[in-house]
Image (cartoon, rainbow, N blue to C red; front, side, top):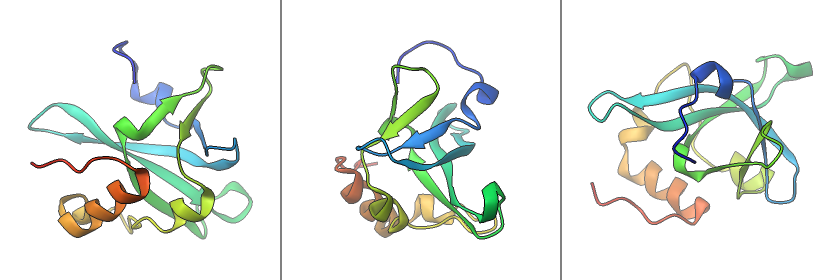
Length: 118
């Protein structure tokens, strides 16, 4: 991401596309680390019946893994739809997987990111 200030409302609702431009989901929420005062993850909603949340899945994606598209309307995530679906789900707002080293290792592995040592 760049260093320009952006509002939460400017990010929520943006489309997330995969490496081949396929639609993956929509940014639904942002997770902020209160100690660091920074956005650490975005919640990407995938699936759902006719655009609703019924049957949708939610995945916490490291904020640093998103790349803004040149059109300014979407973000790219270097994953396919099947890879995204293998990431741990956030269910009923339970963000405990964000502090689970095993879950985070799986996320970082699929995203090809080096795992933080913190």
